[in-house]
Image 1 (tube, rainbow, N blue to C red):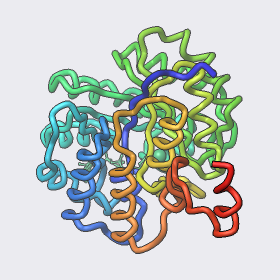
Image 2: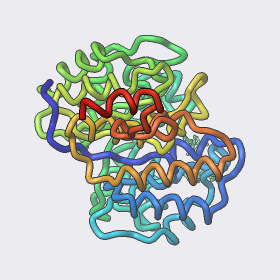
Image 3: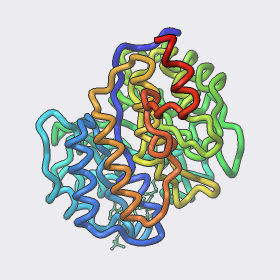
Length: 316
Ligand code: COA
Ligand code: ZN
C-alpha cells in the first residue's frame, strides 16, 4: 500500500460531537476535554462553532470555551463558521483557523445554513476576507460531498465547480465531508483522483462519518490518493442536526490505533487519547461506538489458560 509516513488528525468531537448531544455539555467539561486532547498531543482541534445559538444551542458558549482552554504552542485551535458574522466572532475569540461550511447539495445547504449554494459561495468571500485580515488559516468544508441524505448522488462536476469558485476567491484548503456516511472507498478514490490533480497546491482534508462502517476504509483510500489530513471524533461522537440519519464521525482512538498499527505516525499518545474517550463516556453517560476502548490495542496480550501453559512449557 502507498501510505504516507505521517498524517495530521483534527479532532472534531467537541464541535461535531457535542453539537448533537441532547443535553447541554457544561462549559467546564468542554474546556476540560479540549485541554485533555491538547495534552494527548492532538495537533489540530476544532474546538466549537460560531453559528446562531438558536440553530445549535449546545455550542452557545463558544466564546467562553475559547477564552478558557489552555493553549499549547504549535497546536491549532479552529472553529466552524457558516458566515461572516461567525468568522468575526471566531477571530475575536482568538481562533487559529476557520473551518467554513457549505454543502454540495442544495437541500442540505438550505436545511443547514438557510442559503442556496450560490449564496453560500458568494458570502464565503467575506469570510475569506475576515480570515486574511486576521491572518488566520481557512479550510473550506464541503458537506455532503459524497452524497446527500435528501438528494442522493452528488456529481463530481458540482463538487469541482464549488471548489473552483472558492479557489478563485483565494481558498487554498478544502475539507471534503461525508456528512451521513454515504461514501465508499472506490468513490473516495474516484473523487480525489479527479480533484487533486486539477487543484495543485490545495490542502485536502477528509471528514468522515462512520454511519455505514466505511470511514476507515475511506480514509485508507484517501491516503492512497495522497491525502494526509483527517478529521475524527473522540469515541466516535458526532452528527449533523440538520442531516437525517447522521451519526458519529470516525472514532479518533480507533483511527489513531489503526494508523499506528500500520506504522503511520500521528504524534498522538494513544493511551492518553483512550483516557480522554473514557472521560467523555462518563460525561455523556453512555458508551461510545469506539472499538479500541473495549478491545485494547492489538498489542494487548492475555494470560495463557492453565492447561495450555503446562503443555507449552517443555517446548520453551
Ligand atoms: N452567530 C450568531 N448570530 C448570527 C450568526 C452567527 N454566525 N449569523 C447570523 N446571526 C444572526 C444575525 O445577526 C441575525 O440576528 P438579528 O436577527 O438579531 O439581526 C440573525 O442571526 C439572522 O441572520 P441571517 O443571516 O438571516 O441568518 P439565518 O437566520 O439565515 O441563519 C445561520 C443562518 C447560518 C446563521 C444559521 O442557519 C446557523 O447558525 N446554522 C448552523 C449550522 C450548523 O452549525 N450546522 C451544523 C454543523 S455542519
Ligand atoms: Zn461532520
